[in-house]
Structure formats: structure tokens, C-alpha cells
Image (cartoon, rainbow, N blue to C red):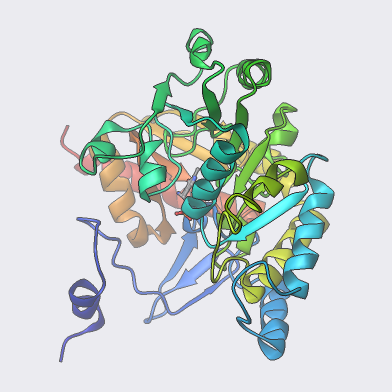
Length: 400
Ligand code: PMP
């Protein structure tokens, strides 16, 4: 008889050469629990998903209520499904006026696909501009605008007419011109190791797009729903895109993505051809019910507002000779250490210290701290104490 670890490796398609291999039986709030009662403080939220924590009672209630009414009914966009209508209306109510038409899909990559198609269709142009170290997903289109050659090269040919420019380089914005369909940007680059935009950079991108009739797409898949201290980075920087993509925390722990634009732009997918974008499961009613409940919790509990003091507490507590800096905003933090060997040691040994930590895709000398936004000050202090012990351990045992 094979055990669960063996079955996991044998029967679940793997792409990580070193998966975490933690078996989890239950998750509640900021904690996950293993089969023998192991308790782990979740410091990554399943990569910026569980902003309201695991199994928030209001999310669980909304899911149960929806399950009692209906599951899937029909492909997206045909029937009037109350959870979709309620959630889309709520989102439109908190977003800038032009972001009022919400197309629900299943994931971030799919939202990216929809957004690029929409920009090409609306502008009649094909050129897509993206940034160094950008991450927008793992499908072919998302790979085509990924800022890492290592991942892209292995899967060529990709989408034609994509141009990479330098994040935070004002001069490179000259590349945006009358042939540009769209510019896709993470307002704060997450997988690059939480790189903030320089003062005025997003405004400059916006200005250049407007001048040349190119659409500006913000990827707020990680920055959305309070994580960086405001509901969206749009609110933080006061720059409004033409298309917004959301996923991860959008579904409150359920799979959901969305590309969002004005009614005028979105309507270009209705004709020539009709049904310019189709999805079977996009906007699944259970996911929309969960997402709406989660958003209501974020608003009611003022979770975005709480991020700044929690972020400061992490920065204050994490004082250790191995840490060379902490970069980020709110509860999207990159802890920089001296070398990748330390990062690897810290992440792989974190469970022994009751912590769950993770890597960034494109930043080898930092690990991620992005806990559920509901994390309390005491939980932050506990997590930091454990992390300091783990860093001491790394200091002793890593040979560099
Ligand atoms: N955009 C960003 C900024 C992301 O971080 C991710 C996922 N890490 C995606 C898009 C893709 O989302 P998904 O994995 O749901 O396809």
C-alpha cells in the first residue's frame, strides 16, 4: 500500500522539483493543521489568496447557501445568476466609474487572456507591451508577456508582436506608440520580489497610453483586495487603467478571475465575431457567492486599513543579521537575505518552526511574507519570534 506522499508524487502531475509535501487536514483563520495535529502559521495565504483567512465563517456560510440553491447552470453570460449579478454590482460600486463591466473567468491567466483579446479587438492593433520580471500567469498568452526569458524560451513560438520594456525606466515608455494595442503592468510587481513603481512611473505609463490610444491593463491579481493597504493599487496610486484583471483573493478561497473594463470597451466582444470570449465555468455561482462574502468581510473589518500597522510590526520585529532589507507594501513583503542558499534553507525548514513561507519566482535572494490580512498583532509577534529562531538556525547551518 502506497502512502499519501507516494501517491501524491505518482499521480499528481508535478512541475516543482521540490514540492513542499506538507499534508494538511484542516485550515482555519491564519493556521493550517497536519494529520498529527501539527500547526502551521500561514505566512503566504496560498500566494495572496486567503486575504480573509481560511474558512472565514461568512464565506463558508455563503458557499453553503449557494450550494443549496444551484451549482453550474449554463455557460457564462446566458442566464441571470444572482451571485454573479450581486458580486459584479458590488465590484463596480467600489471601482472607478469606467471599470463597470465585469467578465468573470476562472483564474488569473484566463483573465489575462481575456484582457489581451479585448485590447486587440477594441484597438484593432496587435502590439502588446509588457515589463521585465512581470508575471501574469502560465498559459501561452501569459507566457508571451512574462518578463523572464528562462520560462519563455522553452515554449516558443509564443504570441507575436510582444515587446518587453524595463519596469521603472521612464525612457523605455517611448516604445508605446500608435501601433500599441495595450500595455500590461503589475502596479506593484509581485513575483519580481515586490518591486514598487517609482514615483510618477504609473502616471507616465497612463499618460503615454492615453496619448497614443493604447489601452492600459493593470494586473492586480496579487495586489487586489486590500493586500497593499488600499483596496486596490489603483486607489494607492490614483492611476486608473482601461482594463483591470483580478483573481486570487477575488474568489475568497474559490477559483475565480475577472477582466474588467468599461461597457463601451467590453461590448467590442459582442460582435464580429459574436461570442468573442466564452467560458463554461467562469463566474461559477459558488465562487461568486464566496467572493462577495469575502469582499464584504474585507470592507466591514477594514482589513486594507489594518495592513499598514501590521506591515510596520513585521518590519520592527524582524531584526536579524541575516536580513538585509524588507521590501514591499502592506502585507505583500519580500524579506531579503544574503544569498539564495539562506532562502532555500529558511523556506524548506519553515514547517519545523510552525511556519509556511514561500519563494518568489524571479527573486532568488528573498522569501515571501504575505499572510492573511486578518492576522493579529500577537500572531505576527509569534510568527516573527519563530522566524528569528529559524534564521539563527540558518545562520549556523548554511555554508555559503
Ligand atoms: N498575475 C499575477 C500578478 C500573478 O501573481 C498570478 C499568479 N501567481 C497570475 C497573474 C496568474 O494567476 P493564475 O495562477 O490564477 O492563473
